[in-house]
Length: 118
Image (cartoon, rainbow, N blue to C red):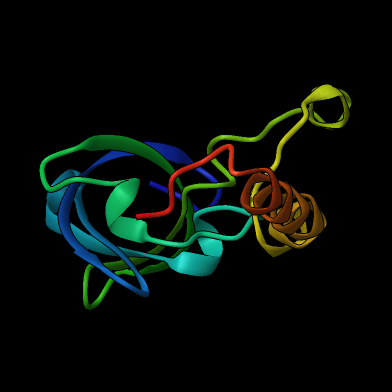
């Protein structure tokens, strides 16, 4: 195993800050939340479950401790041309952009009595 290799690991723990895994030859690894996605990750436990087999990219290897620093996002790259064409609506900016519309819709519903708020 070398840095930048794409390997398969098994999820052994999920924390708000990242995912713990075991990999080949009894290595233990951590995928920090910043290495899961370039987009906002609200809840790591919604993405990974104990026992999942996932592919990751090796960032660093500590041979003495048999520890790995890993990246999920690097192992699952989306080509920039494809990424530009996808309408990904994730994160705070999306919510901020929709907030005014949602408030207007609710005000209109309340004014016209089109919805029961009990």
